[in-house]
Amino acid sequence: MASVKKFTHKAATQMLRHNARETLNPSNKDIDQSRTHLNYRISPEWRFLGKTQTDYERYKLRLSQLHVYKRADVKTLVGWVVTVPRDLPKEQHEVFFEETYKFLENRYGRENTVQAVIHNDETTPHMHYLFVPAVEDKKNRGITGEKVCANDLITRQELRCFHGDLQNHLNASGIPARIINGATAAQGGNRTVKEYKQERQHQKKQERVRGVFIER
Image 1 (spheres, rainbow, N blue to C red):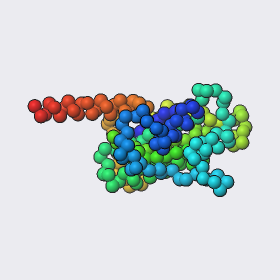
Image 2: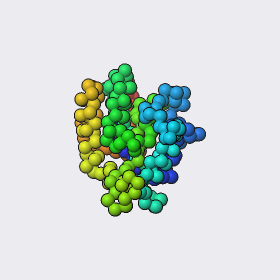
Image 3: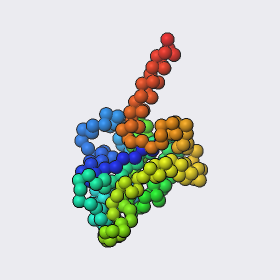
């Protein structure tokens, strides 16, 4: 299951630091800091002019190459969260994330990719993939002829196709992961990260209730 969220410039900085676990006293109570060492980066080390870049430096560099509207509400970063399917064996998790990363990088462009990290210190292993939403700019011909516009990229059509396209990629890669299932369709496909976490909390509560009922 995957969910997507768009971030303003102000929120982007915080999100990059949060994913890298650089935030002191994180607000996310699901994080088990004793397992944070199990997290790992899947995006490559970025370099520019022979110097290693931080994710934030790469993000800023890419923005400098694009036309960006001077408004505080402009979404300059987009993040997909892809959770490992429950029925996928643990030994398949690493290759699942590798192929999912390849799919995302190919879909949104290596030049736009900012950060991709795997979190194993929360309830379910998942990947955060963040990228700058660059699209063709027919009006303002800047350095690259592109602009930042998340709404032009993450459209309803994109949301409808995303799961199916990812499933096809995984099938072609020989990975037995079921991205599309009855639950995906019933839940309306893609959701926000907040909606996904609320659903997981509800599922846990229902499982505890059923457990108590069975014991009685």
